[in-house]
Length: 210
Image (cartoon, rainbow, N blue to C red; front, side, top):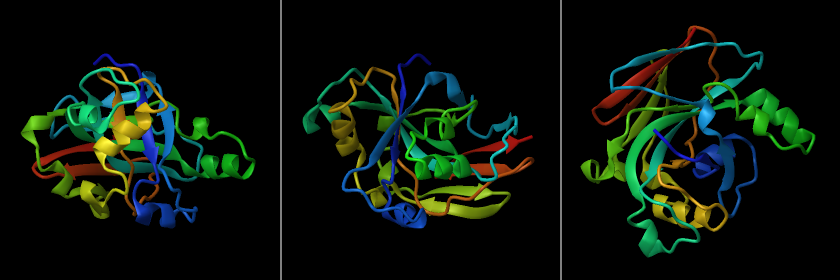
């Protein structure tokens, strides 16, 4: 899969913003990840095995609806954004939460808490036209069999088309670019030998950190 960048949206679910104890922003927070940190499942039902080599005491997977851009766009209108999504899937935005908190306290950028090996995990792509009701379909994250996150895209504060318009005011978006749309409440930490299962309707995949 060839693309330019991963755009991530933070604090797009009200309950997650409150969960972090942060002020709720008027607009979602944006940050970038490079293509080099992406790990994608080859098929639904796959169990991915990833290395756990973190020193951070709070390594957290954030389950999110993820969009793929159908074409280039800059300072897009809502009419343009309606046709801008080619594929969707569920992904995990990995965060080194302890490290991020320390950087925030120091007033420093927290890029290194979001950009590291396998920091962006994706399921296989689903063609947009094959899952028209995806915003009203519940998605779930289970950690070692326990439900931790459960939400619908309809719960987002800013909806996908609005996000594309908003993001494109700052970044020229390229065909194939990946957009993580934000995570709901329930984020929890993982450790070595943790298994995460991502579910969306009849689609699922698992990730085990070894």
